[in-house]
Length: 276
Image 1 (cartoon, helix red, strand yellow):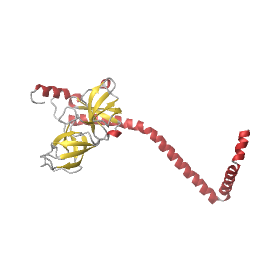
Image 2 (tube, helix red, strand yellow):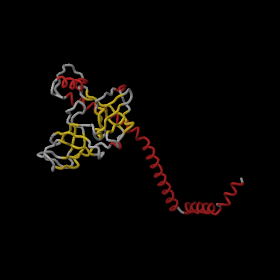
Image 3 (cartoon, rainbow, N blue to C red):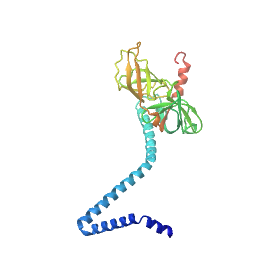
Image 4 (tube, rainbow, N blue to C red):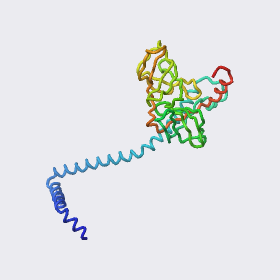
């Protein structure tokens, strides 16, 4: 009780001011219909603004659930497109088997660990052999390719990032399919070096670079990035920088691509001397 009295005595001036303001506000609101309407509209406007903020706040916490749902839908669409595209091609199989006709399958995974500041960077995914993941599977992000699996356990897999000095990738210009070799020089996290492109080829800033499909890992036509700079002063080939489409610093989920015909291709090529 004493504490309450001390509080009232200490802040009596402020409390009296608030009380008088409340009384004046009440009298103003009830004096005329005009003032009553203005104050009512003001309260309604404030209430609407508050409800909008509450709704936005609630939607924010639903984003992760919404993104996961979209991720599942994208995976299903990728598999459907692959089946549809393959079914339109000539097949040597007489059995109507969608698995035999479909070459690539997709599954989504979350990035649970990653390095981007080393010379040889890797990242870890939350899927492994229990989910059908194997070594040598391509990994792509929402915007472009990201790496290839190099280690797998029951529930996790490790991916060699594009930002790794040991990573090599066959890539091509989308506009004319002229191909070369891509690799990271270990400097800028957003740039790769595109080699083996001769001077007679006409290139421009912004040209799209994509996968060739020559390896048994990556399908053809996956986004890699865009030409950001080039120089033709040295030797017979261009010096080309490609800005990556994938932002590894914000990479939170990926798609893992399995090639159903990979081992058939690898075994055949290894059996023929000089192919590899």
